[in-house]
Image (cartoon, rainbow, N blue to C red; front, side):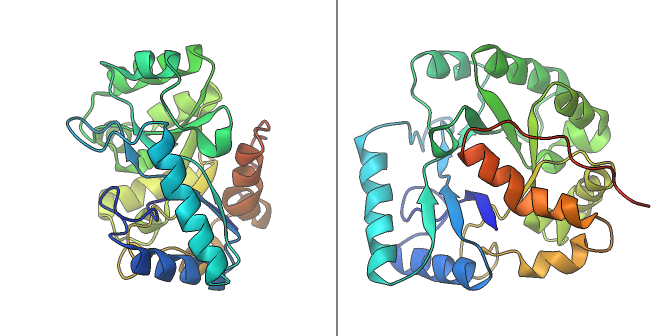
Length: 249
């Protein structure tokens, strides 16, 4: 399994505060069958947490890689960021090559203000796609607009944009509206990836074993394999994503 959304890089955002917690998160991930993680600190949040492409990020990522090697944790780390898609500057950041894509691919993990109007969300995604990147929409089930109208997710899906659900949403840890919307998207085949969005080693954790009992009754086995391994692997390899299989009743 591959986790494309994880705040495991220590001391840079509201995720892991230090190396000890990062190691605990990494051990749990590896023990639960995760073989690779995209390191995705918050990026471009207004007023703080810039985390743009640059030497500081590369140093922090390499330091964590070396730490995992020293501790014999068999987990591969890829570059990435959870980019706040601020409509006021996202176009400029892309054009100036300031953003960190998933594993250096064309795929960009993006998040939005939870209360952003659906029309603005869709226009911003189109602007990203027009600049040669493929948006991977982080936790669409948590946005008010998608909760009110899941058809927005279908619109994104139909245009080749990717949708990443959070493990916590499907486990009911992020509110009933997020859970209901995530299950709706899954049941209609409108998801490409499930990720942990882990922030710590106690509450929002790494690993997917606790999720499998939720997925297995409602998802075709081939779809589960795509969500947790096949599609994440293709993204990190910068390969196209196949259409998920139809869900069984």
